[in-house]
Length: 333
Image (cartoon, rainbow, N blue to C red; front, side, top):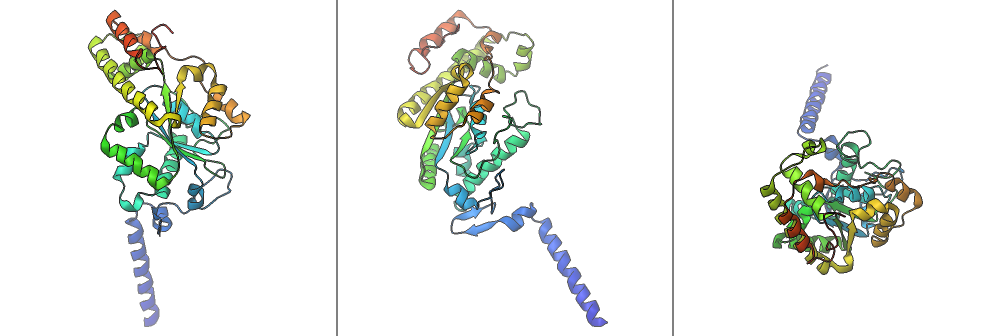
């Protein structure tokens, strides 16, 4: 009787100890799923594919052929383009992950391909569930592509990417971020390619202003925003990015693809095929058609939501002439 009582007490103590340990573990899956190896700390033992042909995460991520990074401007159309690419069966593009900034926060154990790619996949998956790519959550704009692969992939991933656009352009100016990019390239040991999305500068600047003064909703209801001083600030910000992006175009050469959002709107299928060719991806007709179906039929000309002085219009037009990729834009096209 005493022996039974003794073993019962031991059993209870073991259960209590295990429960206490699990309470201190923020995620049950992380308790059982962490894998420590010579490749470094890595969260998930297996990445999930929608077609259920599961590979080990190491095998999956070793198959990635290209890292894609967006550069450019805020409010220029990067979110749409990155969402279309994330819909490809062999592409994962995170939204606003900030690859250069995040890399520098990682300790040595996490500065490896497997941990980084796992974070990008997780971001893409979350974006498809609750973000702009969600089929069920309402946002101002929906970038969900029905019938395609947003947030997941089909058996393999060829291109892994991150969309941060304007911030990435600003970051590259700093030496620590240039060093981070070089280290990422060295660690991944795959080509890095860049996509630079350009929108009509007048619309881009106007939208930057509307966001800065929190007046977008008012403008949508017909109000015309008159704030010449702050508009001057946004013009200056825009052209500081133009100068950097112009240097990036020269520096990265054929590794950078310039995409005009107006071209995507007018010829979505052709423009998508050009991106696919740049990234060396096979894009079947269904993918291209499904993506083209969500592209706006007409761009929003936010330039008309803002009051401009003649001096401001002229200043922008003159500045544009110094940059080949945007020199043909004007207020009226």
